[in-house]
Length: 421
View 1 (cartoon, one colour):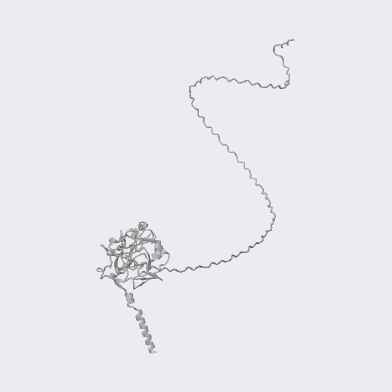
View 2: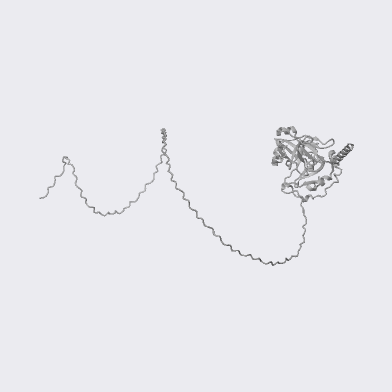
């Protein structure tokens, strides 16, 4: 029995010793990396260039229209750090939590590394039913009042207040063309705080949780922060966010250098101009030697042609089937007479409407002035008289009508002439 207890104790000790690795112990008590770690870890995701003002800065291989704290990411609330930016990029653990962003008018957005970690290096605005945030410029001192800080207009990203906690906030961004109007109707959120323990110069800011719950009409569920032991994309699962936030040792900040630096004049234009953030690569063309292989002659094989026998098969005659035609009986159906429906004619009542007499309007007659014009005498034209031929008309003997004799007194008439003989 004693041997069994000793055996079980030994197995338990080996199990704890193997499961609690030095790497996990280091992650539990905090990780530390050198400044050179930024240069080596971000090289696969972009190009390092030298800037005369900021030194070595990083240009990401991002898609067209990329903007920091806007493209491919969203906000979550934590009780320890307030608003934390969750990036979908594999390099987001560094570029959105360390250092600042610089927008070059020609080459676009570039990241300037630094050693302090923050949930997001942005300034906030509120008002007019909108929340807005903008990347902080390199070298801006957070101990100053945010009321004196005014980023360029195109730095700002605005979204309706009710969608500030949405993981799909990229679908609700306001067009940058409206930034000037919204900025005039909003104010800077001038609240800062220190996090990360004593001696740390890390500031967080943003709208208050109770204010957000008022505009979203629902409670804000905080996420729990769990630190990771290796760099990678930020992930949020089951209200838990895994982040990689090592402490950066500044001892080698002046001596650290990227292994490959691209001259800034060989960088292409920024994404907003329709170009990608890839450097111009001019590789020499390698000439491939021409290989001439001898042609192998294949031997010709003369195979005898097999004659196929002709098979004469008799044609089978198919019998013709005469099917009797079925006569269909004629059905004499009586014609149904439809009854005539005499509908009474509705007499319309005659409406005697009084005739409206139109008043006669007597309009004054306008007298025309008499014009005395001279009378033109027309010359008399003697036209020849056409003689009409005399037509002999037949004499019609009409019976004399007996006129009644009227006895009238004789007037002074000459006496009648006597007939001779």
